[in-house]
Image (tube, rainbow, N blue to C red; front, side):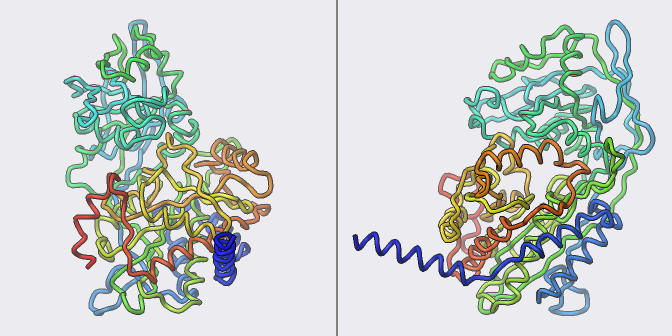
Length: 552
């Protein structure tokens, strides 16, 4: 009985502490999203007027919150910093028409950019992609994994050929096998597929789109790949990108396999085994012609900071990406602006509200950095650049709490993170969540590979404990049914589409509630002497342990 009373009193104390923490305003969250996702900001594309407006708005809000500039050092002014970090990026845009055609033994057929294939502007360094009658070779899932004794290529020479590859892992269909079952590994990501084919000298990579293993529909593929592309500046870009990178509609792929004397479904099933060998589609070739404008531009990460009172060289990071897709192909209503209200106006609004809360409180022992990164939509480029060129040493970075595409709906009973990271930071978050009556639900779609699709990942792979927070789907008002319906509706109808716009009926009460917990976690980290780490068997533990001496 005494034990029960003790637990009850501890819980009451925790809830009282939560109740006395800072309050977060649904109205301010709504207003920030409304502004950042307005047509005036033109979809927040990097290297556009929309970037300038976004960066200026964020700086203005951080200043008003009492933050200090935490970006690049100001030249000639010792100890002073700017509000931004310069991020040099390669910018690639298709100029003029995209001419595509496929040929088989019976004749040729014109293909349409965006409808049949989604062809990306080449980031390989070539100014003109121009080839005729290139052979198509099916390479299964395109995986080389020596630690799993897996090789989809079996020595095939891809030079001068187009590699046709499946999305996700060989385990996706069956849920069991060498790649962790349903949970996607990095081998399943499209970024891996493109990199691997480039390393093997392929003329191009064509990924077969299927909604379930990709975790999104064709409109997302089309809208994300037919606009301006960006990449980090590379000394040898052809080592990371083949001249042609594209996605193909599944039905068209099935038809091409048939024309080439192959059964798509049978080969796909074979590709889920170690026995698979690459197969060339007989008499089926593809021709392409399109020009590419390539430039180097400078985008910006925005960095605002509270300097720690006693341990300023140790840093806790809150992050979120400010960019979206900008202006692109028009939808059925003629709307060309990809406003990105949920993705990631919500994360930016959360970042600003957290900064306002910290600004009203005494400075913690450790420093806190509020980092709004660029070009997430182009492959986590802003966070990757920061992780390669950190403003504050990664060895002394306590942890990263990333926020991406949060729910603007009502309060939920649960929360999640992207992926299933084995990290003490998550353990601390789960404990903190009890004060807010929230329970942890593991990533409901580990097969979607969200762990590799958010800005915590460049930090994680360098050993920094990092998570990407996700709103729950068990709504207080409506339960799991309402939550899952909202998720599915957004993914199908709005994700990476012009319809991702601010709505007056969004309450933002769930975000306001959850931010109390995220503030509490960050504040605990910032006041602590402890250094969270990855689990002993986590793939990122070794990288963190290498820098242990720098934290003593």
